[in-house]
Image 1 (cartoon, rainbow, N blue to C red):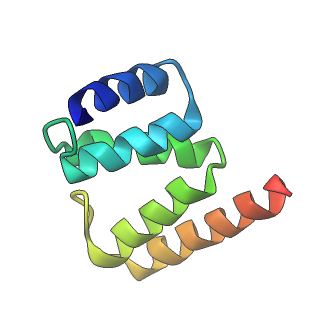
Image 2 (cartoon, helix red, strand yellow):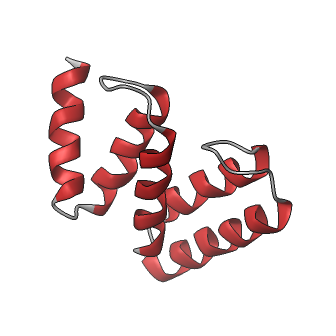
Length: 93
């Protein structure tokens, strides 16, 4: 049940679970089990990226590259987020 999954993911994200922030942002971005909410998805991706979660940084890089989630396309911001993702992956080892 996507709605129940979204509820559980939201609770985990609200509790500070970084991977849950990323997964819930994906659900919000796609409108999977919840109403689509690009602004909230963007905020969750940013919070997870700030916690050095590489997949969130990669999602932000894509959003900047293509002007998604209410962002204006910006190649320099996209490259910056790609770099942050690479740094997060290097630190995860």
